[in-house]
Image (cartoon, rainbow, N blue to C red; front, side, top):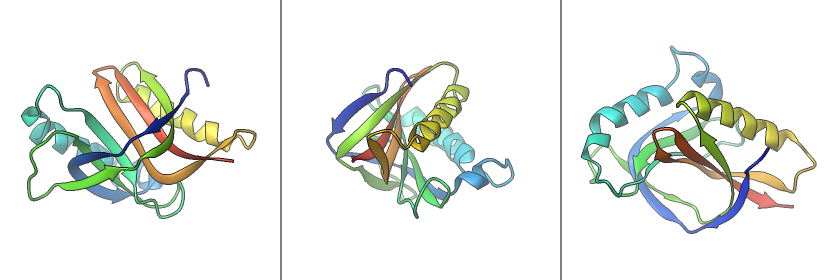
Length: 152
């Protein structure tokens, strides 16, 4: 997959709204939680953000792997806390960054499929850590997906 970058990141605090889900539930409109979470974020939090805030979709607290339950937090690095918000720390460490460019959310969905396919290849030097993965929103049609990794 072209344009994948190996990066080392410092920790960052992100504040936002959180749900627990699993990928199987996200494939069914009646059980999905991530899309409604983003809707609530766009309606309630996004209008209050300053221009210098970065928006994130964070995947963490994995039960085991991509098929098990995990937490999703939709938020920003610069936002005023409310009672229903949670703060998490994007873990410092090694990540692979997968660039996303195109119409959202379709381009993100397609890139996640490429991420899963990439990690199915046993010849690669990285393994997913299943600690912290996140999407960082750069513009209306550009996102960076960061996957926490360990090197063999």
